[in-house]
Image (cartoon, rainbow, N blue to C red; front, top):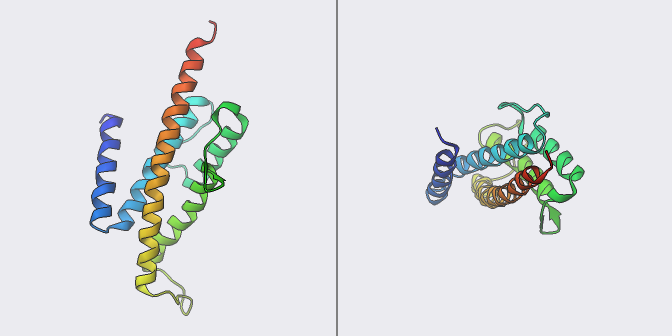
Length: 155
């Protein structure tokens, strides 16, 4: 299946899941979109780096951070005084809390009400949607620039 159509379907589902208040699905789909864009960027600028489909989200973010810090042209934008890599990594931790936190808890440690937790799920879904859009936009700009630079290199 063409990658374009997969991404188009993912964004359609993110939008409909947000409207239906299925925030766990939104969070999961946003992680999928972000991971795909990071895999594409990493493989596009440094094919020697071995990344697989089953690389953890944290590992992808670490590799992405390392690559952009070494590539002057590929600096990431700032969002609320933090770079995009840091924002995505902080969101990853919120994502873990939401995805794993609805039914799983240790006895006597969960003082948060269900409504409070679901409010955090909604907030995490909204933040993930915005970050997925930002990563997608950054990826498109940087990968095109990289491809242009490669094409202009003398043979």
